[in-house]
Length: 290
Image (cartoon, rainbow, N blue to C red; front, side, top):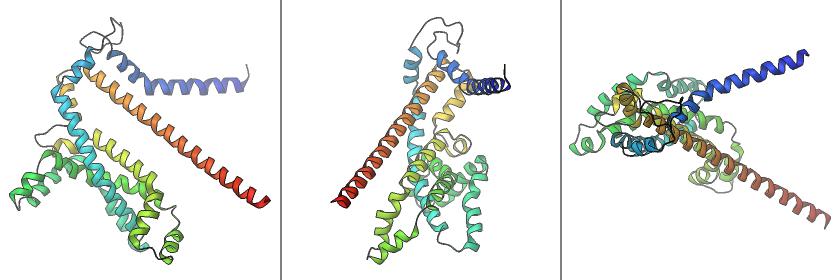
């Protein structure tokens, strides 16, 4: 037995142990969602059942919380991504001396505890929206306050993602477009946004997922409403059931499906780009020979 074989065996054992630690609880939880006992139980497996998924569907509080979580997540995406985009563009326009201070101010909400953000959101918007009864009735509710509170720090995540992409942007493209008579809005829509599309998609996904799983800020900003996370916290305090495992299976399945779909579409786009470049090179070669 050589030292190289022992080294490879140790690496393989470590990788297997790592994935077991990472996915073991998920596999056990998935088994409990299809087992008949009223308490989450993976072994012994008594009988296969789908009743827990039916009970999950009929759980009114959980379905209402899921609906609110999706609505809040979409609202956070619609607010955080444009704010992060504007902040990233301004980051490249201001002077280098003020850039450090500007970066510190824009990223500081990420370092602020979610409890403080949630409480301050309720206090601030309570006074800001008390000017008229219409604005108070429209915006001062759990859904809008959760969107405002979560967007205050999730927009910083979007800023970092978009800024990383923006640093690789060639400014000469903007200058060339302006020299050819394009206006600034045309440069923004036809040159900058297409270049930032991958970052905008990534920022939207990160913003939605960060909003969907947020608990600290949401707990204080949601008021009398509920999200899926707050409902789950209350259910766990009363005692967990396999219906929660069924919910986890559904969420994991959707996440895996989304990841696979994104990878398929990404590879299809890459193959299309490769074929286009290959056809262009062949056409150029044929013109050269002709």
